[in-house]
Image 1 (cartoon, rainbow, N blue to C red):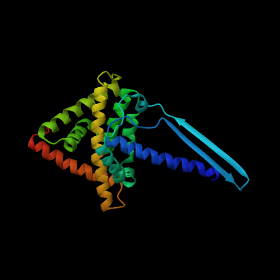
Image 2: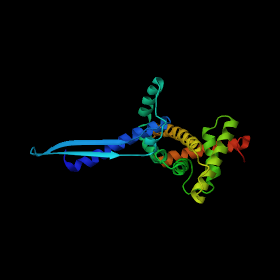
Image 3: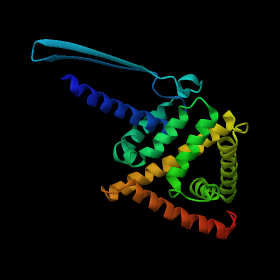
Image 4: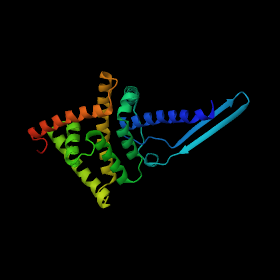
Length: 240
């Protein structure tokens, strides 16, 4: 292997590893990620020149410092393997920008920064670009997507309003006092569940149309949510 081929090969391997780690992070909560990455290459040029390359990178992010381990029970292992098979490649690629934003939030040591990344991931996934009045619309759509009963819908809605207020206080006023480990974990779980539902939709839409783009999938998701939110408002489950 020539030296100019090493970087594309290393980039491809890193991309594959990132995809697998990110899918695991969506599958279940728990700290999983990279700490030390080793790439070792040996190659010969023209049968005469031998060379070797040793590349090591070290990562120190929240997932390497926190105590909550990523563990799987025996039944979960089978489900996890199926999850990786079902959502790798095209479904992952369609949703990858939102997934990367979520994953970046998981890696933040600073609570307020992680909170901001989760909120941004939700906005990227469920709201039109440059949307005004994001707080109420995002709360409506997340609660419509995740809530089951009227009580659950109202609870998720209120949580999202609180989360958005905490994020605004931190981002605009520099006051992150309301963002504790508990709030961060709750928003992480909400974001994870939203991404699960959206990657499932990505897979379904891709199976029907191999040329579909994320913009098209997102428009379908948002259209469905507009209908759901209207019905929930009419029923009184969401405020009009």
